[in-house]
Image 1: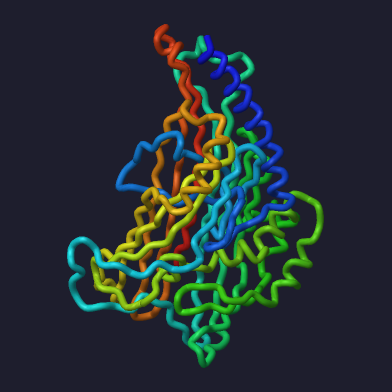
Image 2 (image 1 turned 135 degrees about the vertical axis):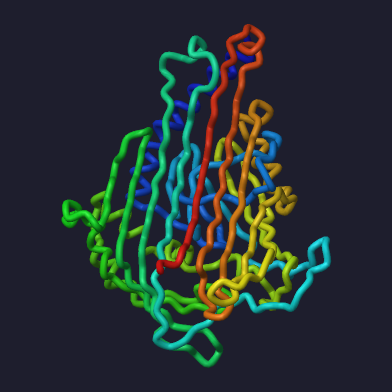
Length: 398
């Protein structure tokens, strides 16, 4: 009976989460903070960093996930928000277990005055709650729900100037925007700049707007400028204006353009098989916190209309910041009641000759299953599934 009582309490808490998620979605559209790699993050559209070659079972003491924020984009909720922090200091590249082979290549961006390229970035952050098992055991007041958003932004970046130190001033112009926001299974905002019917939306004001970033060859955004005119154009309290303002925030801009797989390198000259890494921590509110080590490996150098480097990322649990995480877990009301399954991986495809990113993606999913053992013994399994998912994909548009 005690376990049943606990599950009932969890159901009530989850129901509160679903309702708060709705409020969080609205707040996100109103304020929507973003995050950048290497700094504390708390955003609706963002994920954490743990991935193994498949789905790895992790104890509930390690499990925690929630909304996402980006230097990867964001979706705020007061009960299930994902907060992340990255280790700012890059980790030195280390050799793989198998000795790296072949000549070293330079993993770096290259800038040429006047050089232009068009990219599409997709940032997707969702969290959901679902009942699993016997329908007879499902409380009448329980409702499955999904809350989150998906952003697709197409932009042109043009190199205006290459500085003496090798950094470059890049002008970025927004060409197209799609946004889909959901709150407990209901669409609260659906916008597509390509649809004539959406021309009157506040989000339409983003198209054609520009800002400038100073980029390093290591894929870091060193400075953001000339964004104020675009921000002034979307001022207001309407949901679409709030979303537009978030997309033009410094954190979102950094997340949009930075390439962590490159900035984590201490030395850009890497041989196939060589590995390097960066630590990142995610806080999933009531579900606890997790720290991951994102391990990047140069898996191959291919010949495909020029030389192309392929870097694969697999995230693994890390003991870094163990003291802080233990204190968070001690206050976790779900500790000992849930099983966690997670995956976190990514990929970078870099044109070595042109020094341009062809594709850069990192994706994470965490699922917690909270089950009632008493219900299982009665032959009517009862469980709650809570999922946090984040996708960050940058791709070159031909």
